[in-house]
Length: 113
Length: 118
Image (cartoon, rainbow over all chains, first blue to last red; front, top):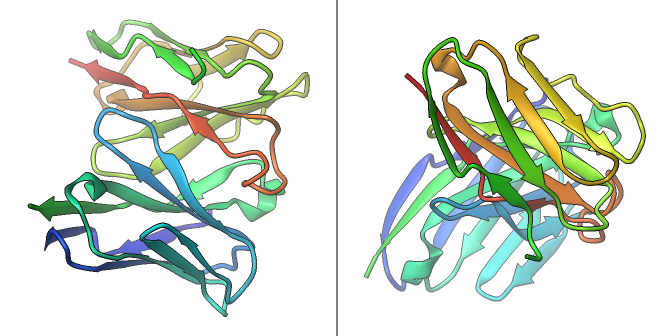
């Protein structure tokens, strides 16, 4: 089946630093999604990308849909303690006409105040 | 409430027992999904329901797993004869409909049921 590989697996940064994480696939995805999951909660959608090369921002978050359609990155600028959580990339599983999502294994972000 | 509600939030059970997990989706959402999240891993698709269509059960890992949904409301995920490898967080999500642009019909996740099989 489709697999999404995220890196790094975990990050430990100081408050105020910028963060970059990425997601790659061996297959083409037509949509890239970035979710954040906080402890004890379900994932929440942060950003959705629909076109190769698209760059989208949501506050301090910026995500890009790679030109090859096989990768995406998420940047967080000027990190704050509440950015702590697990960040997942996801995409609609192609063979299901997008009715379900394939998720990466996540990047665990820790922000030290 | 306005969100997806799951119960119980935590369940500890003995190996071999059956468990039933419940999901109350957002009212009006026709699509409902179950995912499993093992410790330190991503979400693994189990099953999804869309309106009155036959459910997509292709992610269920074994015949010990089953799920039902009554119309466009409550869903229950049943695991029979639980095994230790079933220990995980089981997440339910709902959306207005399946497919299409995610921004128009994003998945709303519940907080999950943490299942521990001893």
